[in-house]
Image (cartoon, rainbow, N blue to C red; front, side, top):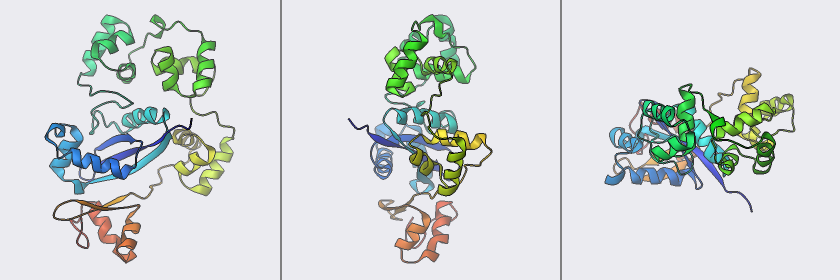
Length: 296
């Protein structure tokens, strides 16, 4: 059965640069519309993202695609990007990410104290009614040693064999009912990389990246995740911070109703009939103008 493919996206506040990281198995445009609609409902208005949308106005937010991944890896990458952008502690994410993770309202100090008392990841997760990855992430960022040996009784061979079958850390951890870091440590002991096992040399990847210019296109070419490509490029001193076109949303300036999505500022200008109109559109996206050519 073919795996579902979804997207990781970022919603950024143009005024304070705070972001929200999300995932969707539908189009990013539709998911963004859902966020806008949810921000208008009373029961949702206490969510950090929706509080910010109502405070600053939807015209001060932009949405863009970060990456495209298969089911399983998508959930892992959401967790990684939330950590990378620090959007749980200094942004608009209400959870640490991942499928089925509920809003987590406890402090790191509370979690660490309870873990030291209970000594087990799974008992601490049960106490706080959350997934084990949430507890692992909190302990890891506070440099707290995770006592894997207290509850993990499988051999390295069993783990390696199952990982080779399932391909993903998350799925392997779920199979063994443990934290992803446990699986990662076992694989590391046997020098097994936890990304796709590339059949290509770093030189081939670098050459192809210089040809294609974009990390996502290079990852698609080699059929691996973007993080694998980015790590190889960064290790070889190659800057991957090449900005890609940001999607543009056209809003009715009075009702703020979404009228149309564009792939980039230049695409929006072309659709309006003149590529030279891009400068004013760009200024609106940067918050330097309120409207351009009758729209927000």
